[in-house]
Image 1 (cartoon, rainbow, N blue to C red):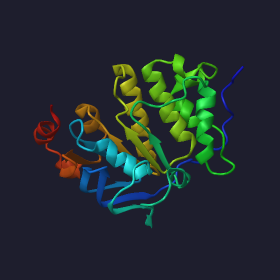
Image 2: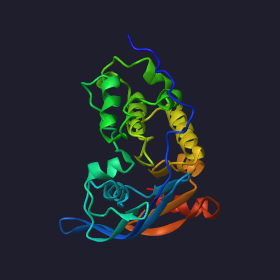
Image 3: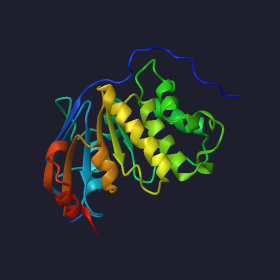
Length: 248
């Protein structure tokens, strides 16, 4: 029977670093998905990527985590060029990815799904940190249940928890509110705010739900046809202009 983990330390588990994506081009065959896209994500801040469907938002995240190669430009993490680095090596440098659709393992239990995050965790820290259960208490009561038996919202919480097990310095989230009930959207929003406010983690977030993004964003970019058409910090965001760019 599972019981809550013993607290290891009051010390924060998160480190600090910065992402700098410089003028990247990305292609799928002959089709160009990204054109000279630049974005930064700094520790203690949430950077939101906005835009309509099919404008390259997920492609940008896939490039950052190494799931899709870039043809031009540069991706730097903590001052190091990681443009050609394999995804698992980026993960070991503190980059964690929560993909669109969650991609949890349906036949593994919640406990086992969380344990898959151990591979990228620093040596000596291959246990699930208490903060995962503080942020998503429902997971603590479902450790023996299979991932496929969870609701969509619970699976999303599990996917984020699995990413946090690796002690990321950069958390990359692709539409975490997609198909999620409003109560869990609020829980996810509070979790992102908590992680941001700790100050040691950079968060890069793709989001279609404008109100959710506006509430969280410290910085933002808007993509159209694979290009950045608007960017700035929260204070410079003009809601009417952004909504016009992202509305269907």
